[in-house]
Length: 361
Image 1 (cartoon, rainbow, N blue to C red):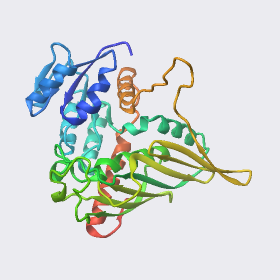
Image 2 (cartoon, one colour):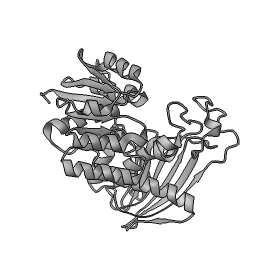
Image 3 (cartoon, helix red, strand yellow):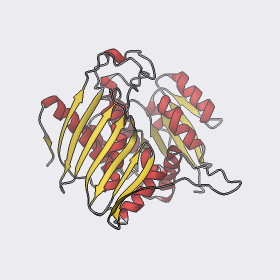
Image 4 (cartoon, rainbow, N blue to C red):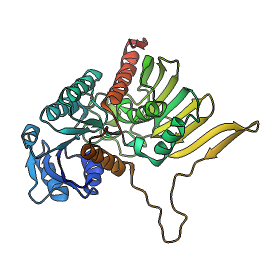
């Protein structure tokens, strides 16, 4: 990774400042040369904090895309804008990292995929939970065949009282939904990735909005939580074409005694099982006639004068993404895979609304 990659940032809000720009800043040969936001002060601050001395600032993303020196664009806007901006960027000759979810709708996600195919440019989605040490170990373990056939799985993203109430999170028009599209998308992506199974056959799902006081105890306060039309919780059963079954559970607000962080899943195979739950990685199997559960320590350290510090999943994601651009290899998250995630998420909403299963061709 020895050549300079010039990056443009479109959307300079929370996810840009909390994840993408700090992560890109750790890559020596990345230069963030342009910043765009409809609120110009946000773009100006981002340029000051992360940009090159001559970084440009825009309120119109199409002006940023017109710069031929920009090779990579990060699309970090509300969900409703993901598709149109990403498609315009691809046709402008840029490689695109789009924050999750891929799009507000499955149709938009497929439009993005088609644009990537037609332009030959790279498109990836910000599912950084694949980059956790637990996930990377699990992927190698599963790909070795150690679990056998994976035929049953759970994916979780469960908060007791954690409804985000800033920006446009509570705006259905901008975001497309609540915890299903916000946090369950991470867990579903990781589950499908570890299973290496992207062929759904049927989805049945149900969303819930039942709490009398959803704002009570919310870690970010009320600020509209009690009046949002979005779901507070949801569950779904996803049946894959090979018969494998995935049970999905998610919530922003739920009277449960066991919150489970996004990016958690349990996989049950014909030989053994594996679980990533709140970043704890365990393997279960039967040995010498007895059930055994093993905690897998993926930390590093235990050596004098070595702290054992590891890169965060966000930093690892950024490094792997830029490496794929420089070396012209596939990104870790393929757009075809992210499209299936969007297909399933939309099917959960559709099933809940209609009261019927959704079948895939």
